[in-house]
Image 1 (cartoon, rainbow, N blue to C red):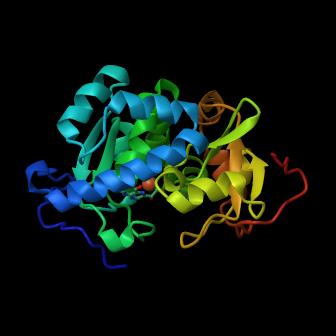
Image 2 (image 1 turned 45 degrees about the horizontal axis):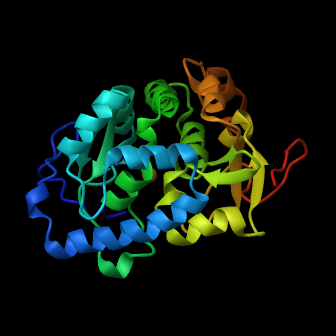
Image 3 (image 1 turned 180 degrees about the vertical axis):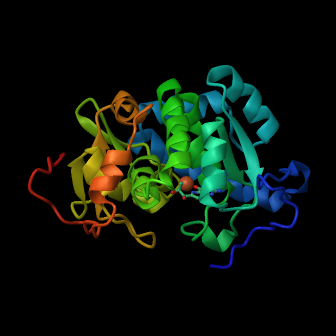
Length: 271
Ligand code: HBI
Ligand code: FE
């Protein structure tokens, strides 16, 4: 895939300056439209922890400045965001997470892409991911994920670990009282999927199980057919923090993945 960002200015860690002053008025306006549309939706369908984080970040009508975000994040959880040109190689991505740095793409989509784009842009990366970095437990889980990533390659586990990211950080659902709420960034940065993941009768919603998730394939070009539901961020943290995934990789990595959308014996469905 040909990537859209400008990688010529990136160092070996793939960091670039945000160059906030170079965003145009039209880009700030587009951000503001995306932000207000999504804010309404996440108030109804987003996880409470996401809403708390969003509020602490004090973002609103213009594209956020990373320096200001970092002042807030540093005080809350010690995380920071760094600018990147777009997708970066997995190992560099993991290395940043392991050091509590979250890579955020610096460019914004075009108005024609309000509803859908292929690569992550600043709206997906920032609006979708950064609010939960304000949550202490989720923040620790993200770091643990980065640490696990650094070890996964030698253990043949990269694919299984990427599935964990997909079904939690990108497309995770969480229980909030009697209701289901979205916490995944891929959901919460998409107007269509924010409603669909909670309200549609089509997808299968299965209680989170680490091995089940690590063995489930995913596709990137449509709404998900399967979501996994956690009870709390503590559950994610317990499953991932400081844990050695090597035996899980060894047991499964050579098998074909389960198809999204299917229900297996042992799956606990959520309603
Ligand atoms: N790079 N900028 C960026 N953002 C991502 O979410 C990202 C990435 N590189 C690799 C990657 N994600 C995946 O490998 C995840 O499975 C970790
Ligand atoms: Fe993402």
